[in-house]
Length: 204
Length: 204
Image (cartoon, rainbow over all chains, first blue to last red; front, side, top):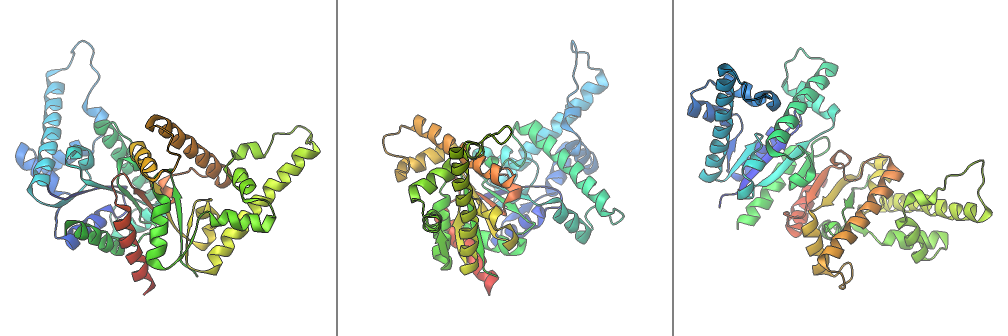
């Protein structure tokens, strides 16, 4: 069975950087935005549409109905959304079956639970996350620290909502992960190197 | 400044083993039960009495009073308890000032917060903790798995209560730690080895 590392992460915590560095150190495939591209290919929707559906509050995707009173339009939109989520499951499972890999986000820890991935959660205090976003220009350079903090909290609220809706588990609850790394104080580059060594040793 | 590693841990999660292995790999001093011994020496109380006070629900140590209605006995007992907690602070600070070290338990992460220790929290699912306790004979061999699980939860409740009373923070909340390790799936020996390498590299 392939070695699969999944990364859940707070916005601005450097989860993507940790994932990328781990993949590089280990020579593993790395999947992040590539998941959206693959879903778009399989569903013939645009990448923008797939992204929009995936990032939307999942509760909006399943309207409350009384007596099957969907309109045709609602029902069609719902069907499209369900198609996207089914394909997300397929794409992530195919990636995990293909080779050793690191997968960032997309509830991969839950989707792949039967394949026993090594599940990492990356987090940081809000000050560090704001600083990282400013340094990397992640959220547009026009945002001041106060607005950035608000933006980060909004994105994390969406991630929490998405994760909890689809998994029934609490996003960021340490019991759902094998390792939780606080990048306010842990050096990502150094940590990735030594964690990668642990995986290399395990493969020997 | 010395390198200080503090370990918070759930009962039966192997936190002590991780701490001991890290100290061995790094050649650091290791403090666990030694803290109780030192407090006993400094206060002239017996180790048993110190242990008993420290493990008791902290809320019992500070009785609610109306109009300073302490009895002499209550007041004397309270004074003894406060002495023990003051000495705990002193002992832990002295240990941290003496040399590089690993300190297990005793809210050391909070007591030493100005010295910026590297704070690890070790946890596991209840099944793994029961298995570890049975394997190590930690909680007496007479306990069956169901009773052991109850015992583990009781001890963890005491630890939570103790930590939260003295620090005002949530025990096990990942934001209070730099790294949280789930020993249900992480091999303690291997992890200690590679984490120790990270500290060795940082000292170079």
